[in-house]
Length: 404
Image 1 (cartoon, one colour):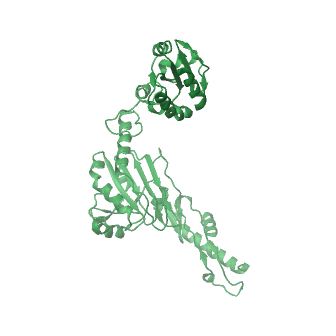
Image 2 (cartoon, rainbow, N blue to C red):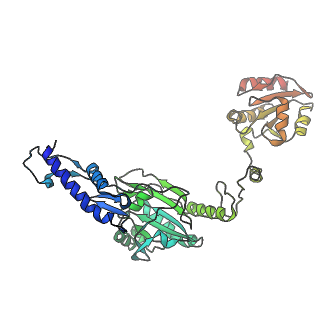
Image 3 (cartoon, one colour):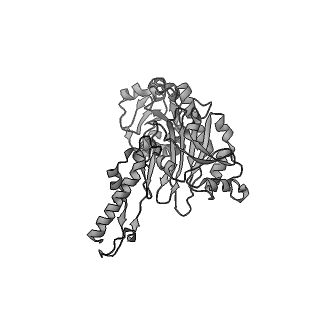
């Protein structure tokens, strides 16, 4: 443990350092949003002398030293340093964190900011590292389709924590040697890692970004976020993202913004949309059908009360399967019903969807509750006790008796 004398001297030095570094940050109109203290970054708006001293005291720890009071040189101490990055600030539906930094644009190093693209959509996507493996396939794929995004008033921006010089060297490397070649999109250099941190994709221990993609609307509001984890810090590569999906998502966001209607799963331009209303959405859902084959592909479908009454009043033997699309047991017994159809060709097998609108009232009248349920008819009359549930032997015994 360090001696009390050395601790006092260290504390005095830290206090002086805190006050000295606080002065420019505390000045009225100080231009810096972040203030560096050693290897830490603090928001200037929250900096006070006491706050600085507190932060320094917390983030610096004495690792080891002699217990002697004879040393007055605080520089003899080893310091453990911890970098403090901005907290993640991204939230869907909220304003996107502003950023500015060096970037490579059209083969030249320059500076870009989010405000440069005010009035446009922005698709900002982070990747882990330059000169890796999956990363160039993604960046090239997005760049080669930049015109499609531009046609939708959207600016693509790639970003990593590598330097702008590294980006430029990668661009100047031929594609057949793992380089990027000609780029139609800016590549942002987040060397301070502040942007990655604000957007919640920074892996602080590694100093690299996850594969995060953010779609920001012309008002600067985050509309969409996807982030992929890394399978291993050794390779820092995983699954490449789909340009088609990013483009489709952008198109869906823009369609909703323009028309107010919502886009269902797998929607593409030209596909049917729906109105987000309990009643009006039924126009879309009315065309959504269950896979009837899951409930026995060889069974006759009963579609109305009249069809049911006509069937059960017929002279021949009839088995009616009452089911619901949500019923797991109903699905499981479906293939077995198909085998019974083949085994007993003289028996008519029919299925009755208890959730179908034309059959809901009849379901209640018949007292159908437990599913699946089976009823048996012959000569226009019910001739056997109903069978309810997943009971294959009971069901086949009833069908065999019916078929005699």
